[in-house]
Amino acid sequence: MLKFALGRLLQAIPVLLVVISMTFMLVHSAPGGPFSADKAVPAEVLAALEAQYNLDQPLWRQYVSYLGDVLKGDLGPSFKYPGRSVNELIASGLPTTAELGLYAMLVAVFIGVLAGVTASMRPNTLQDYVPMSAAMIGICMPSFLLGPLLVLIFGIHLEWLPVSGWGQIPGDKILPAITLGTGYAAYIARLSRGGMLEVLSQDYIRTARAKGLPEFVIIGKHALRGGLVPVVAFLGPAFAGLLGGSFVVETIFQIPGLGRFYVQAAFNRDYTMILGSTVFFATLIILFNLLSDMLAIWLNPKLRQQVRGDAE
Amino acid sequence: MSTEAGTPSIEKGSSLWRDAWIKLCKNHLALAGLGLLIFLCVVSLLTPWIAPYGYEQQDLLLGATPPSMQHWLGTDVFGRDMLTRIMWGGRVSLTVGFIATAVALAIGVVWGAVAGYIGGRVDMVMMRLVDILYALPFMIFIILLMVVFGRSMLLLFFAIGAVEWLTMARIVRGQVMSLRKQEFVEAAHSLGLPQWTIIRRHIIPNTLGPVIVYTTLTIPSVMLLEAFLSFLGLGIQPPQSSWGLLINYGVETMEEYPWLLIFPGIALSLTLFALNFLGDGLRDALDPRTAKD
Image (cartoon, rainbow over all chains, first blue to last red; front, side, top):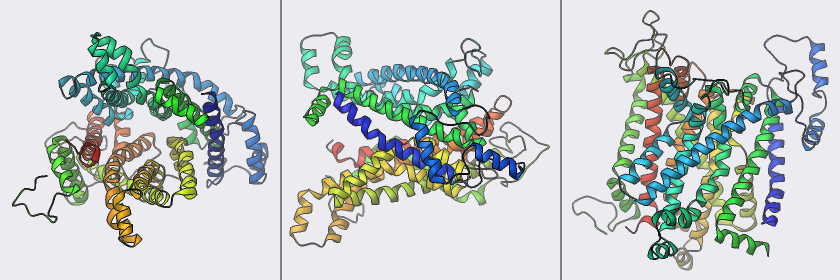
């Protein structure tokens, strides 16, 4: 297992290098420099600015020095917020986004697994069709539509919940978490239904039934562990999607998180911020993919044997 | 294997496609999706002639009105007819969906087929590259592309297409690799058929099923991506409009004029529904593993 994790971490290095290089090249090949603002800037001011941000040096030197900085964990200064570094900006937005993501994930896993398992217990009956139709709606209803609709219903018409903000009024975290989590709940419901159906047809489940075990022990103790492997494998990619989703949800609900910073940086052409956040996001995504793969291996004895076989 | 007498058919026996079509016809949801999709495409094609009002036609005195007999889906704050706007927006959304998917399809099929057919070291290098690209944060990457190179529609096609081809390449490669070792391909070889004939007669038709299924499922995800970018203001730019952009405008005024949000939302969701149901139906119909029932 350790060997597997180390191997995967080693594989992540070229991936990260590609991400950094591609982003760096893209950002630096952009037409119009970061300081070509609406107002014309005097030439000497521009030169001073460029010197301050190392932009006057040849590209390859900028690249090498950027790589060195990234290795040290320094993502450089922000172009648009003078005096603040990209690290600071990320650090100030991360806790909010992490909290939002955590709640959304809880919503997604709880509702999704519940719906999927319920549906798998009586396939092709009403108990299957109702949750699965709901899941289809969840997949076809993007967060930027669901969020405003929820605000319209629960925030404006019923006046049950606050329409925006984060952590200021009690209950203002509910709508964002549901908005972000619903789409993933739908996917998880479909995955867990499929996984459970496959497991429930296995011999060892029949054995458990033959022993006369109560249904909730069969499901909870024997079937769930195998049936949820696809869900666990999905959690890594889902995390990456969650980051993207947070762009929209944080914009809709005016939450001061990483996603909103990123979208603003994209609008402001804050190149160092974009570059730094991309590197940061990529690292996070690779780490989470690794974690979810390891979790899937731990849950599935067949995969475990495969990994062990490869290591020997 | 039943062949209905009386219906004219090109092939005598029951081909895979005929079986699939019969099976698809039994799936009412998939058929409804197909119908809705055809309807939307026809409406989009004919929009310049059948739209009830002009695309630019404003009526500032009228302002935003709820749905009425004159304006079935209401009007926006400039007095523009929403039905017309949604029809024109649908043109853009569907175009992006189809063209970006076509780009993804072209790259993915060629890449996967070459890797699968040549195999060996070439295959390893090519698929390694796909693995690396898989680990990239796409959403962020597309935003980056749009920011750096300006927000043109052409770029949008290629940016989305360029990130959506990876799964297609994997599917095609897997299919081609397993086909190469099949007995009927070996039989064709031993009968002395030329390479190109084998590819054309045996390899391509057998990869088509999964490719069609995955294409149908790629279109909704591409459309969603476009709507997502347009919603953030990074995709389609005014004066052009798409469903994502209309939803974005709708959100700004949803307290006073909720229909401006709801109707474009319904249009987008219904289309995604149709495509997803059709894709699921096609998968059930074309997947040989489910062909036994």
